[in-house]
Amino acid sequence: EVQLVESGGGLVQPGRSLRLSCVGYGFTFDDYAMHWVRQAPGKGLEWVSGVSWNSDIIDYADSVKGRFTISRDNAKNSLFLEMNSLRAEDTALYYCAKVSHANYFYYYGLDVWGQGTTVTVSS
Amino acid sequence: DIQMTQSPSSLSASVGDRVTITCRASQSISSYLNWYQQKPGKAPKLLIYAASSLKSGVPSRFSGRGSRTDFTLTISSLQPEDFASYYCQQSYSTPWTFGQGTKVDVK
Image (cartoon, rainbow over all chains, first blue to last red):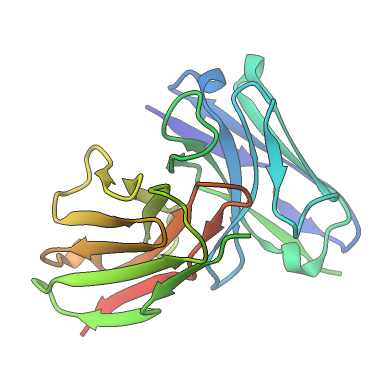
């Protein structure tokens, strides 16, 4: 079964750091671009960051640029999001998701999503 | 950044109704527009990619149309399982952006 499993969320104080992980199962992980999308409580979806299959394309939302770092380890079928200088407005459910078409970063949608991991930033 | 504007933000409908949701991009995104369905407490589900391509396994009552800046998602005959929120998303350029969502509930 194709699935993504996130972990690493939790309660953290403002200004502190957290590292999210996502492991892919049931597909050839290193063929696909991967993305992080978040959803604040009761709000809509917000794209956070994406990385191409070979990490040659990486980009971030303006709201997290300079604070968050995306990376992947294809040998371990894993995606990461290092989050520094966390703010209250970063509080959200964080999803990892894969692009539907192999070797594409742009153009296609996200066809497999994890269950999400919750990040709460509060003192 | 490309802004995505969905309308309406919510609508009430009955089983069997034809429902249309509109999404407008602030600049041309060619056909790189995707539609998702999200139910409470669940991850989003991809319905349509590249404006009009139905993802495998998605019922044929869902259809998408449009190009450049104007797009629609149509549900031809609303079913009980279709009451949910729907989001458009452009994958033409980063930062990827989503519409604000349309909540479809029971009339």
